[in-house]
Image: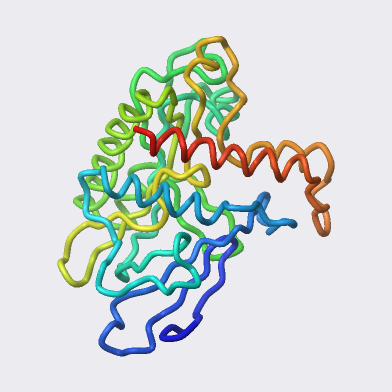
Length: 280
């Protein structure tokens, strides 16, 4: 890509840096159509996924009251327009800032065993998909590429980044979650849980939101009407991919190729969520 050098390929995103040293503080983030599950990149890709993820992140950046890493100092190259952004390089904190408003996913599994989620005691008698009394912050330590992230306590996050930053990460994450949840309700959606990643912007020394934000790859969205009818397992993310893999693969060796109906249904879920949000 003219003017940029490729430096990294992740499961979903590719990173490029400008070849012009005047812009060494920037990075080009390209969202591909790749889809991953159970730590494997799957085949085939999900058509339109990268464009939908980028559009949703930009939509949220335009609405959230928080510094973000998006930059207008350079233009996105034409060949990746729509699925890429120019971003400021941040000194990232090694914490995934997870906020849960509803009981699902790994939180549900832990609650069934212990009555708590990441050490936070919850009321007895909750069912899968129930709304929590208030959103809870359950940070995770960001592992190296290829390793599993590890749930940690708030006290452990203090050990990692210090008390002041740990408190700001927690408070900002919960605040953004509540703000985003209120917007989602206007679209007939429930934001069940999400994760944020923050860093320090070396240029301004400000806490700054980075990575993708409130996309179906980083968040669990439900249809509000379906949830009120007791349907708690239909989300707008790649859960359909995980479910199919769980039923058709023992997680040993190379995962099987996704069937066409799973690919098309997943693509339509991403597109529908984007449409419902951006129609607001």
